[in-house]
Length: 84
Image (cartoon, rainbow, N blue to C red; front, side):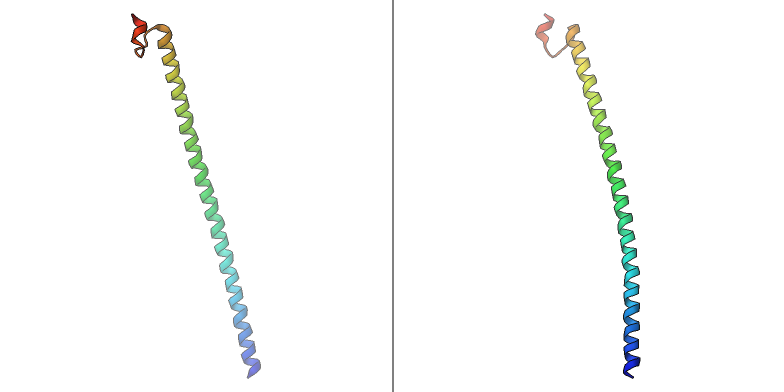
């Protein structure tokens, strides 16, 4: 009877270890996939922010160019004293 109980205990422990190992593998795979998706989303977001920052810089450069042209042409309204 002891041998039968021991055999049953060993079989039960073996099955539980095997099933835990599969669960751990699945959880690890899910975690890796989730991390990959998070990294991809973060990279996309960073790319979008860089594009927006580039557009802001381009707009600021265009505005500065326009201001400079107005100043050179004497049509700048900011300094009304220059027009007199």
